Amino acid sequence: MNQVEALEEQLKTEKLRVERRDAILRLSKNPDFRKLIIEDFCRNECARYVHESGDPSLTAEQRADALNIAQAAGHLKRFLNVNITMGDVAERTVMDLDQAIEEARASEGQEEID
Image 1 (tube, one colour):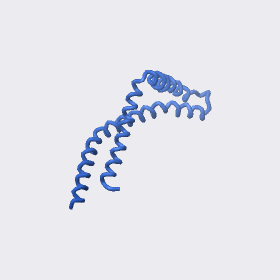
Image 2: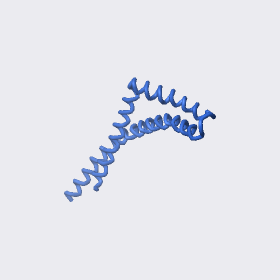
Image 3: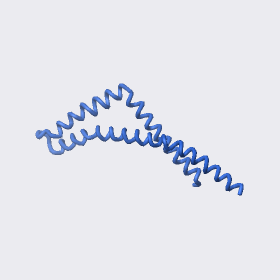
Image 4: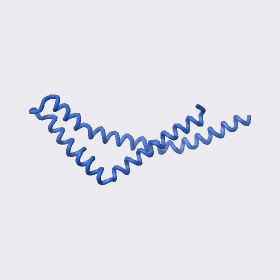
């Protein structure tokens, strides 16, 4: 793989990160997502599971399962936030990659002339 191809592959990856970030931002504005996932699941259901995780009438396995489910909200929020951050960084990287690709193409063209 030559330099231009490698840069183009990296550019493709960075653009996918920007697309994922944009999808998450659109999703976060969706009222159904906010109600079902953020409010009902991340807040209400996970709080209920936290309470269950400390319930001595449940078995140790049931309490551990409840705690694991309760932590799911944190994992989801972290996943979304990490992907937003990666998309922000990727957006800044795309312009640099476009320029690097142009320079690499010019350099390869010059090498062919020589």
